[in-house]
Image: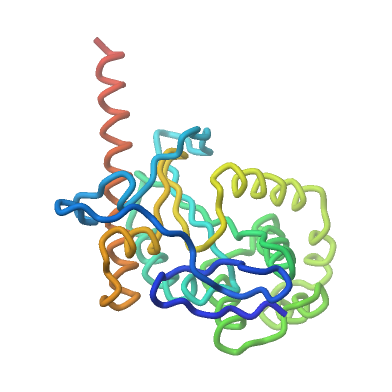
Length: 248
């Protein structure tokens, strides 16, 4: 069983050992400069520019924001309510999607469960929160396909349809795509956000870069979303500038 251990100082869950499956310290980042702050984020302090940016899955000019997360992660659970509220307010500007990480052990099953529900069209915000509650609050065993199917059946998911989709090619393709993204972005801790395939930020980086150890975890998370907002605006402005030049 993978047991998450909170690291409140760094606001991040990582897999330090696949055997023990613990949460540990994420990464250390560049020291803060005097003018740095989440309201005016700086590269290497509040976020990092990805050296080899990836193409995104957006249409109609939307900016893609990805959250890498895990149901094992207590920090992801704490963040989820504010993040869901943020996502609902983005309208047409942002395409927000989640990618559950695969750090081995039962996180493989959790990722397959997530993408199975996505494939079935059943991964609602309500069910997402219910899975988090089961893992983080109720501590329900979700360590096997059977246990996961039992849990989902009690939450309105047709067991037969779920089992049939669980090991389907479509779900495996979604997992393979997630694995490529996780590797390309160097994700070894959660929660982490990738904006437009170009920028990466996290509560751990915002906390470390601005020396916010004395702030509550929820406040650091709020400031992280402020950084995400700034990066989204930056991408949108850059696109408008390019579009304006092309139209001349």
